[in-house]
Length: 352
Image (cartoon, rainbow, N blue to C red):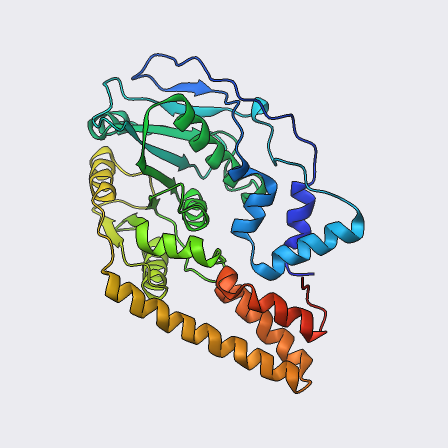
């Protein structure tokens, strides 16, 4: 079984309350408030989360395991009636006729905070802010932190006028790492990510999604890395993550060191600057993006051809090792060919 799949299944197979679609009464604006949401979306259903966040071989392993055990995935991994969210809506009208901007924020601990001074910056930029409770670093990413963030976006968009081109995901520390993974898997929802003191490189830790989703991530997602100048560890991980983005043809990336700050929430001033820069998109030049994608595709094709040759010559153990490496590094970009090779390998890997 592909590593981590058994855990994903055990976390995702449980009963969930029936989805509801009731619009909440909107509380007064300009005051942080607690909300309970009721609206579900297939985007944070179990099947869609696994499709977007697991590699092709891991997805196939889930399907094989379910078939052999006779179990099924429940529709959703969370029961929204039991969840709470912190919401802040600016007191003034949206600055754009298309609506407010939206920042879904993933905290690193189980209580949601709106740091001192941030509301003034949210007002100035016309941002609604929403953060889930019970979504800290000790909770599971796939079965909890991801669907909570996605459900926050779904319900705020339903309840308030939101500009669909200005929807962003963000987080602090471990929450920033989750925000990066959500941005990668859901570029059709989030157009950028504000990564405060936490990031990882692409490939491996963060499996790449399907080709269509990843191309959208490359062409339309803006990434802002903001970390304190005294936070040496996370400045290093920022640099590694930002370089990996360049290597994977993701070019709308900006890194910033926050003066005199350590591993801590952004100050109101730093937060305001980050929002300014997040809104200032810099789309990649089409020719540069095309050339970079072609280079990556050639690298992947060479790896898959090598695996096919190993299978043809009966070196199944070597083929298995290489296919697992390809699956980890290239993720959804390797589908569907990697599944065809896994089926023909006869080396214990799942296949269609």
